[in-house]
Picture 1 (cartoon, rainbow, N blue to C red):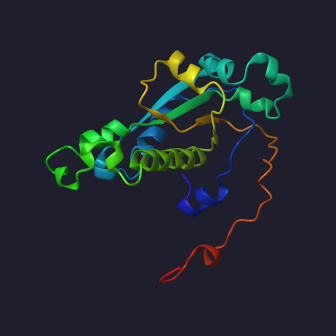
Picture 2: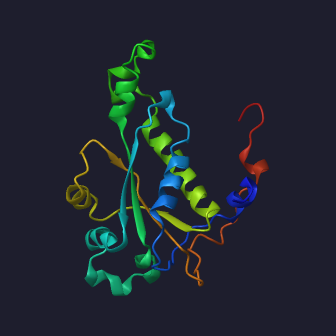
Picture 3: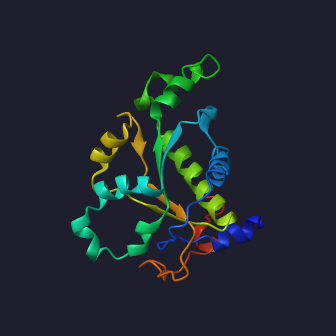
Length: 200
């Protein structure tokens, strides 16, 4: 394992993969780490549908039909041996905050009682931890949106309707040649540009 600062600074979105399988035990270890991300009331309202090997074709057949693939820029993304689909579960938060130790918050009254959707925030932090865990184990990862076919995908995978799909995470061994994304050249903001000390 690598030190934390190195893991964070080295992490990049990987868009080209080798088709070599990822050991399921490694995936389980990574998800175990992701499960340690912050979670309001320890509600832990996130789920992960994991497609491996040939099963990843189910994802691509819905989201990137064969007739569109020749024009797809990231051909080796299709070689990723794992596609993980993270879902946020709002009902888990409503149920948790209906419990006696949280009832005074009144957040158990329903989703609309929450001023901020913590199920989305917490699931996103879990996904970020998953991305860092991949880097720590020498794997590549790419978080990307599912903008086409999301409803059909949910139906084919039997995902319950209330769950919120955050996107897809491709995981695997990175290919030797990596073409940077269009945003890669954008400068990162410095801490001085981000921090407002004391007030805005």
